[in-house]
Length: 127
Image 1: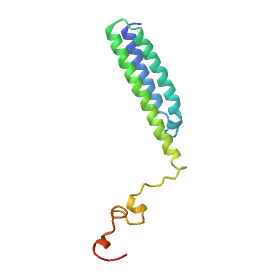
Image 2: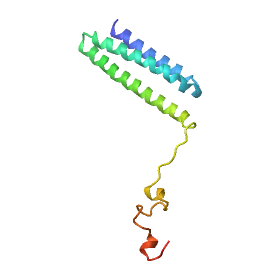
Image 3: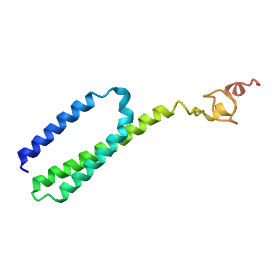
Image 4: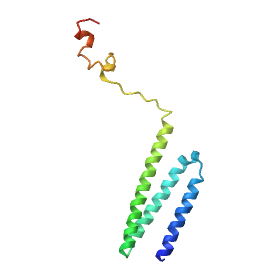
């Protein structure tokens, strides 16, 4: 294939991809992310194959750029999927907030470490 045909395929793929993704409702984005990650993995394998068979230096440069972009896209997709799944599973788990050492010892937060005494002890008053 010539460079004009390859560029035409890339431009059409970008246009079709944008149109397809923009038509999906936001409720379906989370379930479709796992399928999209699989597709990105296939794209990464294809980019690696093209880079391995490149004969011209400029084709190799573009293929290596495709490998880098496909890798970033794949990793970013897994990160976004993980965050989305964490949002949905946060409702099922109750999180206990971390408290300071003084609050754990029964004192008010900000009064210092346990065993040091409070500001009332320093003024000569007893508890």
